[in-house]
Length: 281
Image (cartoon, rainbow, N blue to C red; front, side, top):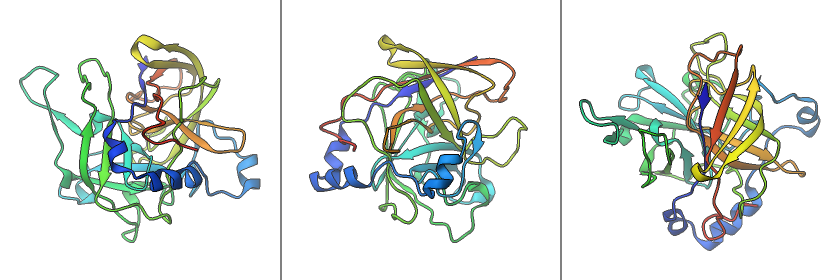
């Protein structure tokens, strides 16, 4: 089964929304985790439940009805890339128009989207009422988004308020396109192989296979490992030698049945050079 990852293309409009001072500050606060070093060193990350506060830049995106979790209709993952921006998959935020071709779609109502930032709550459908809810002010769908072929399938959410540092911190974005490492990690609020009904934050290590430059995709292939339903829009990341996380791409497809018995091919789409957008760390 082919599962797609889009290498992240950050819309140029983002550079208009982030000041030089904010961009400089991002260099010093992005890509961190909030685990004790001794805990992180002994932890196996592949295919495991996440620990509380392990990934402070992850986001849970809930499709609700009038903001009510009791009428929750879907969940996707996203990644915080600034104090007020969440990157995710476009298909998480649109709905197809009935009876017309697949290229025509509508945005979900902003009031139907609730976002939880950070990983202090690992099961977003059961988060305490004291957990801060964030809401979108604007959603930008990539202008080249093609739902028929899953091309340019990502969206940028601008929130109504900045994310508190106690809730979440942004991930780093590469300052330029570089070599893709052999070992990559996917994070998201997907179901597991038991088809558990309550999505929970998990991570899985995946092996880089090849890059398809014409489609701006990369593929990984692993037996018994995959992203699952609910992981769409979540980040594919690399970790540098200092333990800092960088986003490489976003999940735009998943294995809905989460079948671990067969090898899976997954794809992502690369980050372009972002020196004029967000310089990263």
